[in-house]
Figure (spheres, helix red, strand yellow):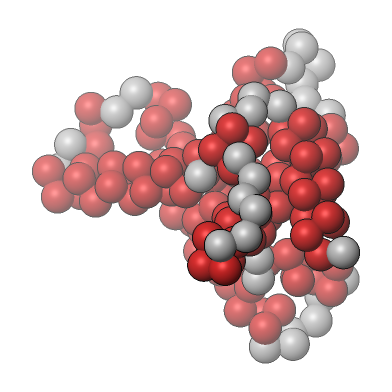
Length: 159
């Protein structure tokens, strides 16, 4: 939900700036994010299309199925926010690539699980079944905690 909101804000910001011709009024961080957001979204969308069309690459068979579970804009926002956050928290030695990739992967899996829970909640409301407190789960600050709770809820409802 947070990432969906961020995607909408990025799109609106780009549209407003183009319409008003005021790109120079942005701060350096906002300029950087906006300059990376659209090309990254386009590239992720191309990867998704290549996977769907069966175009092979070395690792696409590993990450390709995940590309079908979120919008390219959501992948871009998750990636950009984590890269920026990790960079700002890094020591003078920089960000370790493996730690950054792991963090991005965890955030992507959290978002995928939350989307699955949203779908389950819709089904539960439709069928008037027990519903979990999705809002409280989404508002949790720890993605590790969210992952643990969503896995538990999804395994209970699938089983």
